[in-house]
Image (cartoon, rainbow, N blue to C red; front, top):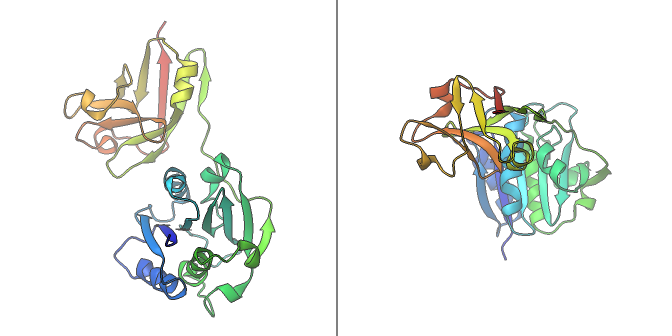
Length: 262
């Protein structure tokens, strides 16, 4: 089977950045298949990139190489790394971009130190082209990461605040807002089941109160807010055929609470 390299960046598609990375990789691995996961990660938003990677990567077949470049610290002393999780590889900066996937799975990591696998005279501002792309292509060709660098024991990690639960309910936060304006919380379905159970409850987010978790957007009338468990397994808030961020005035980091009713 032809090797697969996925790309996740904050580069957008207006400029040449994505295409030139693919050109570098095709030169090294001509048979590679590219999958563009996303190039619309908000600029320099490392944790938004981490969220995209966490939700997409492990659906790909064994041997996939994931190239991830959201790199506001490019040119500084942050390390370029390869990590291996199960039978998949991840290439990118060690700046927290792999926080969520590495927190969920066991991994092994290498700091990229062998510049023979890089482009010559790498730019200080485009490691996506000059370091990460050629390394990803060599991995796709079967080069083991042990030949590219030195083992590291820990990665730089960031974590969102953990939701708090007690006898009165759950306190959480909005951790991601997708392209449709849907509000993704850090409250998992399992936590709701454990902390709320069969009790009656109310969900408070912004100036909106919801009394139940529905199965789908269409469970409410058009233009109405709806709470549901999204594909990530977490509680989300949306507007049926609308934009919850705009209509509810809620931004990433906002509080979301579930209170049980006595």
